[in-house]
Length: 475
Image (tube, rainbow, N blue to C red; front, top):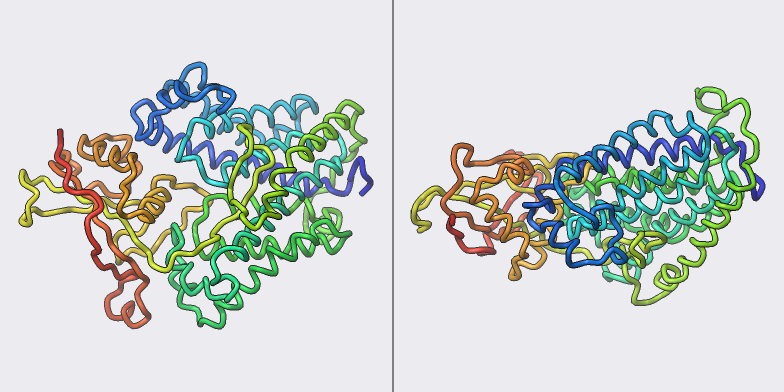
């Protein structure tokens, strides 16, 4: 490919853009399901209070002018509809300026949600989706040949994702350097999947191989993404295989899927097109008009300037992970699991309808969709869908003696029988009337052994640790 256009990359651009649109669709659908209960007008951390306290320049959003749950539904619904249309090819069926506008609207709508989502939207993959969505504006559509600079901006993004994740591990918990972190990680990760129990019980030498392979894939292979073909394609393939391994072993929302999609930018599309049963490429893809080329180069210059702080962070011995340096979430820093917990603590919410929550009261558990609860229930696969409440329950258990304000608000919603909140749970043990008291208990969970699994049929063993929140009465 030359420095301006890469006609042979039509397939890479198609997969990248359509895949990104699907991730956008998942993100908007998750927002429609969760946001109002978590951060809506009556949410656990209400957005109206947040936008009153935070100025536009710190959290640019269409909701800075006015927030209402009805307006939020309209914004998220529009985003979902546009994402579905783009995933179906709408951006390739319109003139280039309109295509760019479609991608820009998707980015602006999701930015508006993330910037008022507070703690519920503080995950690294939210910024990753926004950064990738912004760069997609400058990839063009079927009316022009893919811009080489636009593709390299995507490669630069996936390079930082992979290298940041590798460096934070190597510099962080010593168990990564000793190759022993995976003795614990599959069991203690935020939301295990249906195969996590089996991954945890792999022989320890294989866990060490996993960790060593992870270091190679994240510390060495990313540099090969910039190499000439076919080396770059093989490097992208290693990234994809590594991410598929993570998909199989746990639930990390759309992080792994989006990383695989971004890696497609480094794939030799012409080589893939020759070996796969695919439709013919677009008949005529001329070079981009001058105004588009100038716009892409301007975007590249902006990324270069904004890359200063993320690069400094990558080189720093005090590296931070998953941080945005600007309110537009452009050119962020990424990384995960710089430390690995050795024990899994879980907060279990329980309610009773007894008038007095003494020792004779019968307590019944609330069940979540993704986070461990019932010891006999096999963990489910939810990624790329994001269960934010389940994830935040994991984080809350990391500080067992400091109950989060939003968790106290959650208890109050359960005591009120709030329907929006209860829809985020898998089981409401009080379908007819709210409980009189709700409490939060702390348990230590571990995967059962092979023998325990055969004898009891359970996937988990749990031991009570103590009280996280005392019984709270209904007001």
